[in-house]
Image (cartoon, rainbow, N blue to C red; front, side, top):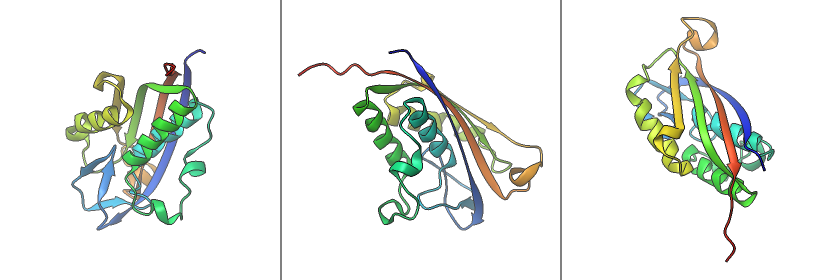
Amino acid sequence: MPMRVGTGYDAHRLAPGIPLVLGGVAIPHTHGLVGHSDADVLTHAIIDALLGAAALGDIGIYFPSGTPAYKGASSLGLLAQVRDILARNGWKPANVDATIVAEQPRLAPYVNHICDALAQTLCLEPGQVSVKPKTTDGLGFVGAGEGMEAHAVVTVEPAFIPSP
């Protein structure tokens, strides 16, 4: 089977007094993302990209919002479950390239920690995960500080499971 490519996107609204988590890393900030789980837009975009690359649907199929089991759930935990779903279907992640779009806070100091957390969860080397923070220079809902968004492109390759 050939390598496949998937894309993902997510956006969440910001609100005061909520922890901000991106790529599984807690980021000090006055506002956090609103959502049923930890609202980690970056990890959610990567999850959708991985599932799409393997033609396995999207995040809502496996982790429906409003389901009590996922209230406040760690998105890295959900990502680990998706890694396992892919493996059961004959796929494994090969590469992640993602962009976080946010005006504040400055994310550059956290990028290496985020890449490490994502790589560890996906059983990848850090050099197989790229995360780039960007701003919109004041444009749109992100520029107004109302929310954040993330875009992801991933590749998956066949996972060869040895016979017992």
